[in-house]
Image: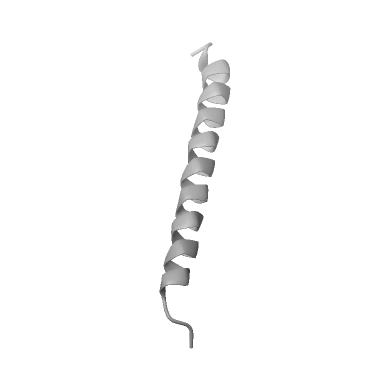
Length: 40
């Protein structure tokens, strides 16, 4: 697997971007739900 190094680097950056999008979306949803809940 000579091409492994290049593809893994590209794949890792792609996965990292996807992960960042998911984290941003999740945190946005959590903030939204926290606003909806009545405070103590």
